[in-house]
Image (cartoon, rainbow, N blue to C red; front, top):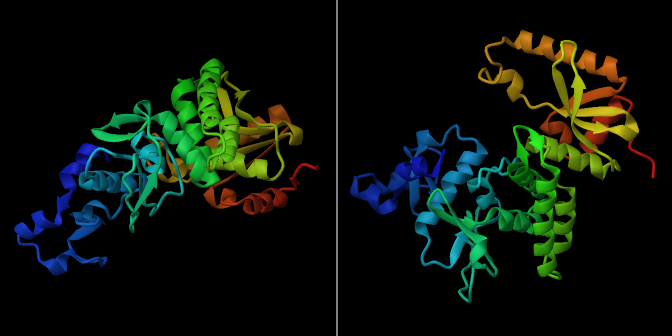
Length: 324
């Protein structure tokens, strides 16, 4: 859902009452034809019943922006990351975030979190008609105050945006991006979350293609792994190239994040049946194991939700954390 689509759906309380929608129909329950997305702003309930978290947050961001007064506040943090089109996970139900500059003090409320901070002119951009923090400022803010899981996924996605073209990483572009963030961190030395942001800046890698891959790498780090190869190429039997999400050279082990979409989403199956997709994956795995003599294991979001969950998954396959 883009911002224009969201704007077409949104209606204020006054607009709906003018259309003879009853006040009881605008309650906060889960029934009724209208769903409240921000205080005093509604959308048809049928439009939000099956929204993915990214689209839901984008809708709520547009609703919040519609109510913004004055020019001191801009959409920021994870909300800005969604506007920039960065693919994140774990954002279901997250409040809309904005940053308020200057001396104006505004409190947060349910569904809307306000941060008070300095905003320089080059920190502010317009995306889909909405004022939000720039890509660089957004990554820095998320790295400082959001969960480490969100921070790594956000930084990886941004690095991919600026340094990867046609799935090929430009190391120079990634290093230049990293250096700009380092300078931003140096200028903010001593402020809340900057030390952690520095770690995220060094850890981010644009080769991670999905939030699940970012989360996998973070949990592997927490388990003691320090050397990662991403999108490892393995030549296939007919000259094609198989790419494996994460290689752990010290353990001679590959790890792949295995989202359900590749199996359940008909569009992503490209016309193949589920059985055909499963057989293709099995042959691919067998080839990779046979050619490299490395172990290959996979898991989904449940398996990488925590470091302990991933440790248990790997332990079941006989993979132990690195020794100190």
